[in-house]
Length: 225
Ligand SMILES: CSCCC(=O)C(=O)COP(=O)(O)O
Ligand SMILES: [Mg+2]
Image (tube, rainbow, N blue to C red; front, side):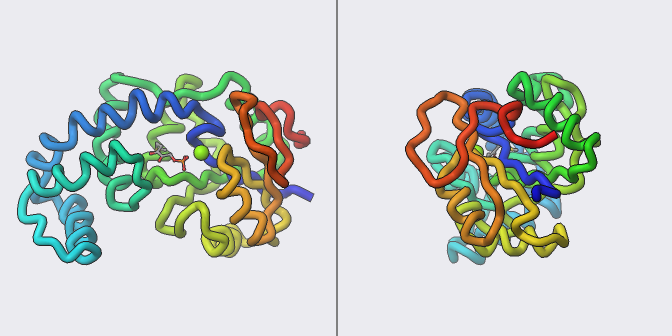
């Protein structure tokens, strides 16, 4: 019996295209100036320190960090530090009205329906928790953050690792098989299933590979209220 819904964002609630063609280019263009302007900020220095500790590189100035991260944006690296910095940069874009986060048409009503039926809703995305809150706060369907009970990002672990789903299950405080995880990536669903979660693949383009998970094209085809 499903008691909790845990959803991915990119390719699941929202189009991959919005993330890759709007958010990532905005972050890439703004990153050099953002790092220069906010180099002394504690939140930025915390991320730079994490990079130095991981890579053993001096990363002495904003230009060095920018040179490191630009290829990571290009490669869509799901690195926690990159995701944290992207979230800080997107804040300005959302608040200035440069863009709104895309939602597939049926998603807001389905989320509201599930929420109103008493199902707690959670997000698990590679985007930072701050970026997730912005995403649902400034969406094409308005502010949807009131529908969610919590958010998880890669500080809980990578989305293709079963242990991440075990940590999330413990944080939510229910049995694993009471959680339905929604994603467009088979490897993420495989990891969730290995941790005992129920799973459903969102196949937005009808191109999904054969897999062991239930497959639907949109949220209205998920067997929930
Ligand atoms: C919610 S922030 C924008 C999306 C993002 O940066 C990202 O990496 C999306 O990854 P997901 O795990 O939602 O596929
Ligand atoms: Mg996804």
